[in-house]
Image 1 (cartoon, rainbow, N blue to C red):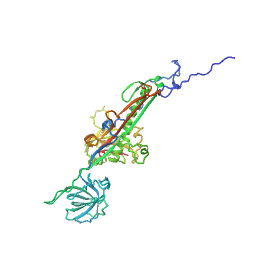
Image 2: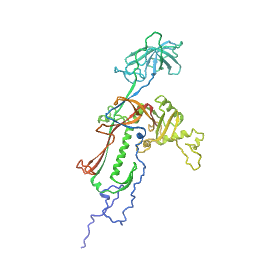
Image 3: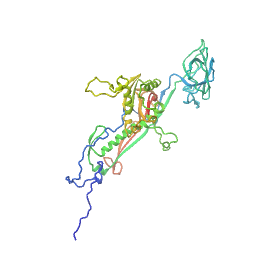
Image 4: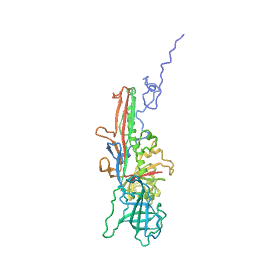
Length: 493
């Protein structure tokens, strides 16, 4: 009886989709005439181009060290005083009237009680309105206005009332409805005293707003075992930072680093504080105030679709006039918002409707037509920049509705004031110039947590544990400070 040869060990080649050295795609037969060996390209094809997103904070902000886990700063309040929800029971023609401030509650006075009004009490707890000051009393229904002088100020608990004697002989132009109503708007424009009288009673202390934020700790790791490091199939790569060469496991480590770099920025943009009673709070986390949260709660919010007409931007400009009136501003927008701005500006030319007059050109027949704008001036300078974060489909770009659905809440752009502002730094104990948008990271003389990286394990040169691996660790502790958020505008659908 003839013998036979066992079928094992056999030859089985299972090419993997990626060049990762596994036992299933390790070639033991080195017969290069094998017809089943594939033709391969050494160079990795960059199908998505530059995949990194971190550029926004690098353009508009700065990074500064901090040795505390709480960042605090003070921002100036308004210089002048105005109340827009003031009620009265006086009737038309009265020479004197008593008013009550009913503006929304904004905090507590030194006694601990909730106060009403737009700063009805100053920083020391004294009434912001004082006897002898002259005021404009304008009817909120547009029926007219009076001018008068404050003759009495009364504080009862958390309510501020004041009496006014009018200069007009006809008295109050329109009757009020109740002390708790919103009948008139009142603002101070000066004072008047009789000859030989005492001076102004009391002192008006500066009103500052105190803001704070806390850094969060971000971590990531890259892991490769020692055996895989010993048998590597090389591939030529070009990375986003311009480096090129033959790598495998270091390329994966480099992409982990790039991904961590992106998270350092996107976390500063998207972070929110953990609310009381939330699951994050129960887990011992506090969160942080990111750019979107700060602007959404303390800044200006545009909703209902992109502003695509001059009248829309006039409304934005009108709001900026009432805030810091910063001369130069940058619009970071998604692609559609950028096109809407281009179309709006082109339409201002008499030939714009035909789509032939975008940008500036010298009628050269061989010149490519420029169908975009980098900025415009209308009261203020607005510079336009595409924000990759809002276009990337794996980030905010995947959340924008197509077609656009008004009111969906998708973020399409952010207006950021250029330059810096002067604030009182609670840590330094003095006024300091700070960019409107900047990052603070934890650091001291012995510990810098801006961007830490270290290697553990027993491979790749490390000798810290007996685990047969190389583990690359990344860590940062930081937060973003949005100063003067009232000068920012967040655009939502």
